[in-house]
Amino acid sequence: MNLAEKQNQITAELTALKNGQDRLALLVEKAKASSPLASELRTVENLIPGCLAKLWFTAEFRDGKCFYACDSDSLVVKAIAGLLCDFYSDQLAFEILAHNPGFLAPLGITQHLTPNRRNALAKVWERIHEFAEVNVK
Image (tube, rainbow, N blue to C red; front, side, top):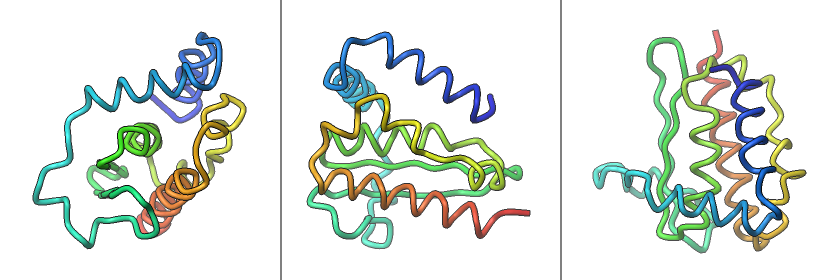
């Protein structure tokens, strides 16, 4: 599935809910059900700095595509970061670089985040973008 299709799917799923808090609650439930990052990947090198919560982020390039994973000791942070990781995983680097993650803002998710959590989200996007830049062909 390409990014436009993924964006349409996520937008449809989230806009079916009444408000941003309900949408965030859905993402948190998905984060609870997701697999944790392997303990050997929960290293200092994989920590996103500047977050109150511990947020680990990994990136891998295989079969010509970028793959991302994350975990956090905060379900809200894991939910939002996980949304970005899932969204941009299994995509070509140049497609990631051409896509604007701003589509989340109108869905009312980010407005319910504390400034620190919005900062964590921005840092995850930066890492996704930097990894894609290194692997663009």
